[in-house]
Image 1 (tube, rainbow, N blue to C red):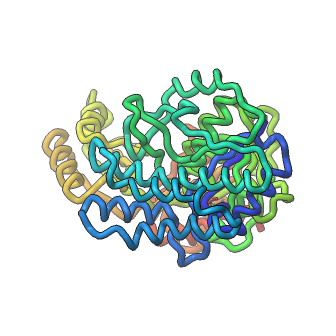
Image 2: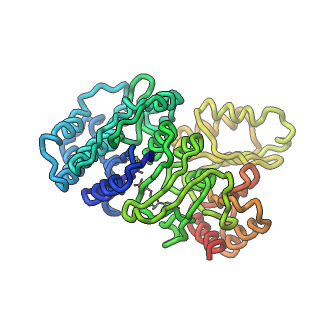
Image 3: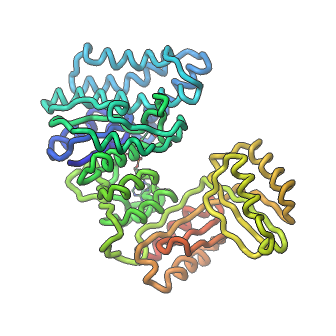
Length: 450
Ligand SMILES: Nc1ncnc2c1ncn2[C@@H]1O[C@H](COP(=O)(O)OP(=O)(O)O)[C@@H](O)[C@H]1O
Ligand SMILES: N[C@@H](CC(=O)OP(=O)(O)O)C(=O)O
C-alpha cells in the first residue's frame, strides 16, 4: 500500500485534479491520498491557504468577508465545474466555508488554525467527489477519525505519539481514502495545523502509522535537484538520496519537502518518492535509509536560507567560567526562544536563531537581560545572517571538499562568517551575509556539478 500526497500545485485547478485522478487510477497500491489546499495556478496567483488567512483576519477584525469568501469558493467551484459536479453535492461544502465565522474558538490563534485547515479539508472533500464521479470507489477520511493527535500549538503543532497507536489499529477498507493534510486534533479536540507546507508531514505520519510500502510525494518538479531551481536554472536532478541528506537540505532551503516530514519516514523506514504530477512517468527522486547507500560523488546538494539572525557575545576568560552557557540558555528558556546553532571560540560565542521568533521588542528585552545577567565585554545582534549547507554522504571520504567550497567563494569575494563541520560528518555549514547567499550557492554548485 502507498500513501500519496498531492501538493497545492497538483490541486490548483480542474486540469490538475484530472492528472491526480489518473495517477490514482494508474496504481491500485495508491490507497491513501493526502490533499493540500489548491495552490498557485501561475506566479501571480494566491494560494488558497493565504486567502483563508485573509478570511480569518477579516473575521477577527469584523471587516466585510463576502468578497474573500467568494474568491475562495470560486477556486473550488471552478474545479467542480470542470468535472460537472452537481450543485447539490457542493452546497454542503460551500456551507462549511460560510459557517466558519459562526463557530466558537478558544482564541484568535485557534480560529486562524481552523480557517487555514479548511483549505485542505475542502480539497479532500472535493477530490472524493471527483474520484467518485470518475467511477473510483473513494471516501473521505477525517483526520479526527483517523486519530491524528497533535500538540496544542495552533499554527506549529507536532505529532503526538498516540497518533501511531491509533493508526496501527486502523483496518483499511477496499476503497481509496482521501484525507486532508496539514492538520490534526489536539487532545482537547481543537484543530491545530503544522507549520506552513505541513501536508508533507501528514503524508509521512500516515505512511509510518499505516506501515506503507512507499510514501509518494507529488509536486511540480521532476525531481529534487542538487540546488533550488529558482537559484540555478535546470540543475542536476538527484536520483537517490538518504533521509539525513534531505533533512539537512530541507532545513536549509529545499522547500520541496518539509524538513519535519522526514522523522516519521525515518522512524518507519518508509522510502519516499518525490514525483511530478505533470510527468508521473518519470522516476523522480527516491529517499532511502543510509544502510548500503552508495553516494555518487562528494556532494549531493547545496542549499541556502536567509531567515536567520545571530547574537555575538565576547567575554574574556569565558572558557574558564563554569555555568556561563547554562545562564545564557536559561535566558533563552525564559524568553521561550529556541536556538539553531552555537559555534564558539575561547572567549566568544555566536548563537544563531530563526529570526521569525523575534519582534523588535522581544529582541530589545533579550539583549537587555543578557547584558544585565552575563555582562559580556561585547554583545552584538547581527540581523543580516544567511546559512548555507553543503551536504553529501560522500563528503567524509574526500579530503579536499573544504577547499572546493571555500576557494570559489574567495574568488567571488564572498566573506564567510562561520564554518561548522564536525557534528554531522555529512554536511558543512557556512554563515554569511544574506545578499551573498544565492551567489555563494551558485558558485559551490558550479564547482561540484560542472
Ligand atoms: N532542490 C530543489 N529541488 C526541487 N525543487 C525545489 C528545490 N528547492 C526548492 N524547490 C522548490 O520547491 C517547489 C515545490 O515545493 P512546493 O511549492 O511546496 O510544492 P507543492 O505545491 O507540491 O507542495 C518547486 O517548485 C521548487 O521551486
Ligand atoms: N496549504 C498549506 C499546507 C501545504 O503543505 O501546502 P503545499 O503542499 O502546497 O506546500 C500551506 O500552504 O502551507
